[in-house]
Length: 120
Image (cartoon, rainbow, N blue to C red):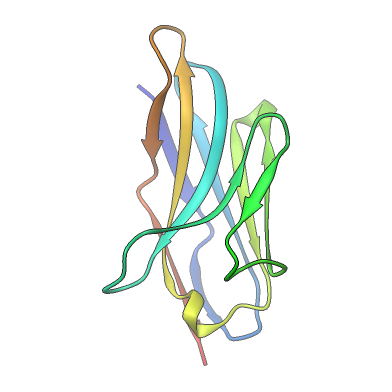
């Protein structure tokens, strides 16, 4: 059974920083895409940033230049460094991974979510 476990959320003042982590565990043969999504109250879940096993990254326009996604493939872990946080960044942040286990086709997995609250 594969699990994604997130950590690092919390309460921070505007202009501050937080670093989120997401570790995948279980019977994993390969992880292609790892990503962060977020969902604010009353809004749809939106893609924040992605990272492929080949090292490519993408970012949403709303966080471009402020957030950085990185990953440690040896640890099956993805990070999201969030700087210059704004109140509108307040949301539950979810980790996502496209994982191939020892058997079967790739499957999509989600973490449980971690709350990020930015006060003004």
